[in-house]
Length: 467
Ligand code: FAD
Ligand code: NAD
Image (cartoon, rainbow, N blue to C red):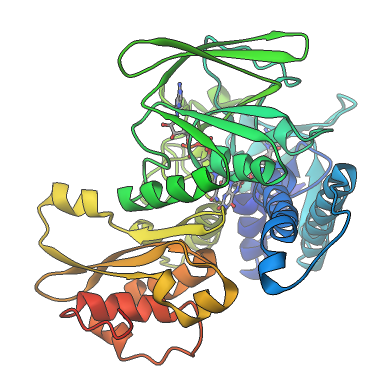
């Protein structure tokens, strides 16, 4: 079979690339080693984690906030099996949606492991070990990533687990010990803390979500502590062992004191590494970077082998589904001879805790380091009428704008529906809006988005109305 483009991997990078290629009239195939399409994101990442976040939030609200709204419930309980079953139904609905989209766009789907024989020939090895050769003019590698491990901890997938197992547990842990206070740890930690587990977070750096603006981590830690989560910051994990149903995690404090925590599960969430196993990169003369095992690409996302491109988690940059999607569209358009563009500085980052955390552009720490002169404006949700009505008073919106030109350089928010609200900041910054431009834009009342306008008012001469 002869194709214009073969995409290896069907995650948000791969399936979006395949659809855009087909839209542009290119004969396209996609190869996926698993029986369902959608990659990490749809099967064991974004979608199932958000399904459990939503379910656990409903339970938490029913148990703790309904009564303040005058709603009383008797015999509230958790059917955890049903919660997991619903999550699986959500995943199936999404992955079958991708199968439908492949058919609709006349993209051939080959199930099996895709491997380079040479740069124009891909061998697909199916589960029964039978093989098929496909030929193509271009290849897009979109093979994603897998969880990182710590060399001194054996992940047994029963008691010492990764995010994949944490999404399919059979019971709510009594005490979940989390290694890593990043996105996965805090999202899945929130799920189980809301369902009643004791959750302890051991983080190497001196703050949680350490790559985001520092103010966000501080506020989130305050809120998650109210939920009962405990934090060991600046602590260095030295080991984890399992005995029966108990896991013992050992770690050193910043002063070098030896500590240990015993729990029934330990979730290791210390980042992810690029996945290239079985691709046969050596057959086309490609190597991966030593650190992170990423594939190197140029500004067109093309590797050093002409006609072989790579996108998503397997290359440099943030490991985010929407970044992979943007790159999928970008490469399809490059192959079709167009001149697309991605502004990597404007890819938002979101943490789906409650309140949600969302961020785009430069952090205050980065601006200080660059020596950029900037001004800030903040607005707390406790001063928002909409937030008072819903009872979501934690958090704020912080806007950073250029001191001289007023151009918005960064927006960092923690609060209700911040994940959706950040879109306004991304759009404003894509059009290089000034803070004043946002202040002159009508925002419906009462909405959480008014906090963005108020923060911009605060940044432009301390003009916020409601503080
Ligand atoms: P992937 O989604 O990893 O897909 C790669 C695919 O390639 C896989 O299906 C794999 O089986 C297949 N493959 C690999 N090698 C071969 C081969 N040789 N032949 C055939 N097939 C192959 N990001 C967000 O933006 N928002 C979120 O809310 C979010 N939540 C997450 C929650 C969790 C628990 C996790 C783990 C991740 C989350 N992410 C989130 C990150 C997101 O899932 C990834 O950034 C995204 O999936 C990367 O897309 P991708 O297409 O590069 O690769
Ligand atoms: P992460 O990089 O977000 O966080 C890992 C954390 O572990 C960091 O804070 C790091 O300092 C800490 N750490 C590293 N080594 C440690 C050690 N030995 N002891 C203690 N702490 C240690 O990684 P993650 O949470 O595993 O997530 C992986 C990827 O998946 C991320 O790149 C993220 O972008 C993506 N993801 C995104 C979302 C989302 O967009 N909402 C959700 C989940 C995952």
